[in-house]
Image 1: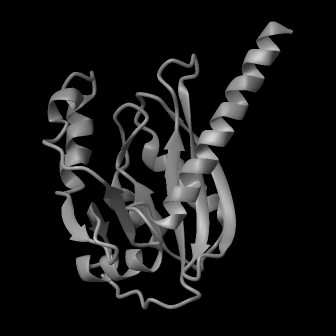
Image 2: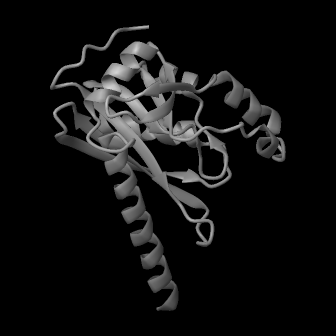
Amino acid sequence: MRWITPKKGLRVLGVAESFQKRFPIRKSVLAGVVMRADLQIDGFSFAFCTVGGLDATDSVYSLYKQLGRPDVRIIVLSGTIISLYNIVDLNRLYELTKTPVIAITYEESPGIERFLSEFPDAERRLEIYHRNGPRIPIRLRNGYIVYIRPVGISIANATEILNLYVIHGRYIEPIRVARILARSLFRFLFLESQKNSLN
C-alpha cells in the first residue's frame, strides 16, 4: 500500500457509465476522464461493457490502457456494480494496473446478494462481490458522506485525495464529468442506431 501525496499536478482517472434498460442496446458506455487536482481535464477514453455480463473489470482496464498514461496515480470508480450486476473486481483491476483504486457509492445499502444469486454464474459474481470488501463511510470536506472501497490505498489517504476533487455535492469532479460524457455518448450512439434502422 502506497501513500499518494496530494498536490496540484496529481492525476486521477474517473470512470462512470451510462445505459438504459428500455433501449434495445445490450451494451453500456463507459467513460474515463483524466483530471488533475487543480481540476484541469487532461484526457478521455471510452469503452463498452455488456449489460448483465461479467466483463466490467476488463472494460475499465481497457479505458486505462487506451490512455497510455503512467502518470495516472489513482483510478476512481462510480460504484463496483454496473450494467445490471456486472461487477468490477477491484483487486484484479489493481493487480492489472498497479494503480490504487477507490470505488465510491452514495447511499446506504443492505447489499445485493439476493439479486446476484439469481444469475446462472451467481457463485462467481458473489465471490467478486465479497472479495471487494465492505463499504466504508467517510465524510467529505463539504459535509457529505460517501461510501468507499479503497484498494492499494489507505482510507485516510483515499479521503484526502477525494477531497481535492470536491466542489459541491457528493460527486467528485472526475466522476461527475465522466457521467456526463457517458450519458451523452450513449444517447448519441442510440439515436444514430435508430436513425440508421429507419433508413
